Image: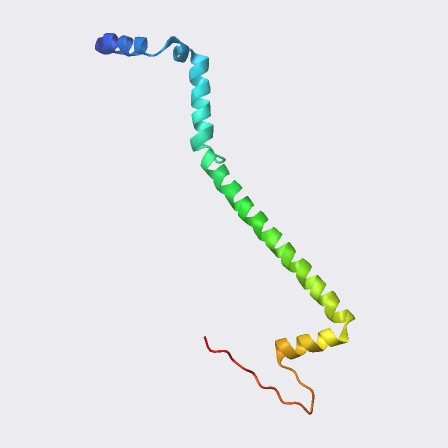
Length: 108
């Protein structure tokens, strides 16, 4: 069956610990290797997906904070006319009819 290489193969098999010669253990090891490296959902892909999920979660948290501050600013602007006028003057350089605006730039 093994031919001329039989003694070499038998010596190699005897070097393998008996625990690993068990066919169930061998199948389990092969299964774990397959799942870890060759499957569509291998460990590397899972780690990349977790990193991407973490980044997206951080971005969602940042955007939620930004949304809350924008909502509070909208509430502030809709409830107070003076605040709305101040915002329009600062952000959009709006002015009343009889006013002139001078923009001062600071040199650094």
